[in-house]
Length: 136
Image 1 (cartoon, rainbow, N blue to C red):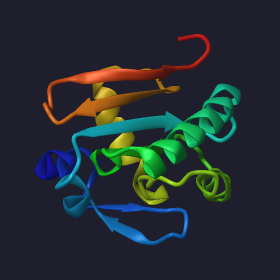
Image 2 (image 1 turned 45 degrees about the horizontal axis):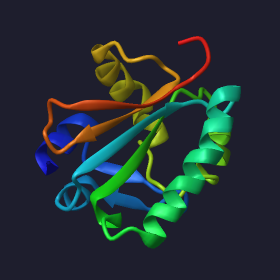
Image 3 (image 1 turned 90 degrees about the horizontal axis):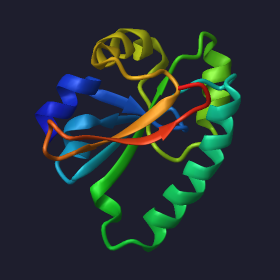
Image 4 (image 1 turned 60 degrees about the vertical axis):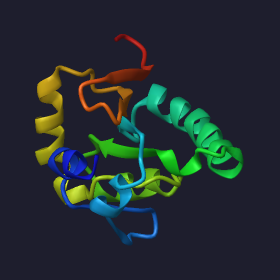
């Protein structure tokens, strides 16, 4: 899954501490990837973010498969401060702010709604909807 993830997301992600994460290393152990498209100013995203944080925290603490799932935040925020503030609420990595539009355009070639998330299985052709916001 590593090469597929690099093609999809680029070589580096960032966490809320602004540390870079290597996508190759991340992809070597994953079976499922959640792509979380969102914006800090979107009400449904803010609500969903709280629920997703709760699920992710419980899953990472208690599941025997905790290393098999990762979520990546893909922002549509226009302001870096808003992006950073929203990222502080998350414990999963994100596309770097400077890369968000370039990769978002590539990812949206799949005609995915802006306010939703998807789970990508290790079978690269399989994409599972995780959440769809209001009006979608």
